[in-house]
Amino acid sequence: MPGGIRLQALTKTYGRVSAVDGVDLEVAVGEFVTVVGPSGSGKSTLLRLIAGLEAPDVGGVWIDGLDMSRVPPHRRSVALVFQDYALYPHLTVVENILFGLRVRRVPRAEARRQAGEAAEQLGLADVLDRYPDQLSGGQRQRVALARALVRAPSAYLLDEPLAGLDAQLRLSTRADLLALHRDLGATTVHVTHDQAEAMTLGDRVVIMAGGRIRQAGPPQEVYDRPADTFVAGFLGSPPMNIVPGGGVLGGGAATRVGVRPEDLRVDDDGPIETTLEAVESLGNETILVTRCADGTRLVARAAPRLGLAAGDPVRLCPDPERIHLFDANSGRRV
Ligand SMILES: Nc1ncnc2c1ncn2[C@@H]1O[C@H](COP(=O)(O)OP(=O)(O)OP(=O)(O)O)[C@@H](O)[C@H]1O
Ligand SMILES: [Mg+2]
Image (cartoon, rainbow, N blue to C red; front, side):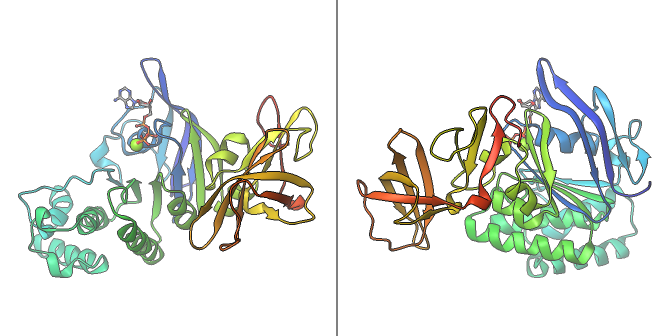
């Protein structure tokens, strides 16, 4: 089937490290897939394999239905934007954007038109003649994106393109990226450390650990039905409470039981008796760190201005619909 990206049994080892380990993934035409996972889980290696900057030990990459095993990076129809968006310091913004087109030998007038259009889309029209060191971090990032944009590839591979930005710029550039994707509908694989970014941008979220895909699915689905304790603990902040079965959250002895902080309600008639160990007021909400009589620690997310303090007794009530059961040995959802 032509279109999109297909990865099959993709494997890359460096010495004894399995950077990417048997990854199967299909990204449909126009789909936006976000990839999250801890540092070293193989996210960048995965993108580099798709782009052809690394050759797999085993498995293959198909782009637009074509086997890429003998296709060098510059012949692959993908644009990779790196973590550290290297711009050429001696070239102006417009020259940086044009660089990709020069490589493809697009006629000059046409190239300038396309560059102008990309710059317009990313709010760079006023800074076309500046040099990179005369730009803010966010503008530099957008130049890197514009450079990828003008190449009009079959797919965009974005490796933490917003990582260097402060919180506000991240938010606005994230919105730009989302709008851009709506306009272009381009196939995109976007690596990020930022969960909010993964959840808001992705049609699907892929969670990686140790070079393997632990789960892939629509954002709400992976959040609501994590496939194992790793995914359960990785997505969500504060993370899900996961306790041994047969304890404060019930469940059988061979299970581990999880409940997210927002699914634990403060309730005077609640079944779980705890003592408050710490209260973190975030303005819009309060994070309660509690300790049960048997020593289990539970974190709950509550309304602001509760007037509670460390040492206070607090009763908690878990939402019975939102209890997660995992196999105690395999960690898989049961
Ligand atoms: N060129 C290389 N030589 C040796 N080991 C490498 C090389 N590139 C990556 N690795 C190793 O492969 C594993 C995966 O690295 P990768 O850069 O893909 O992780 P990542 O998920 O992108 O991490 P981060 O979130 O920190 O960017 C790590 O253990 C890393 O040390
Ligand atoms: Mg990386």
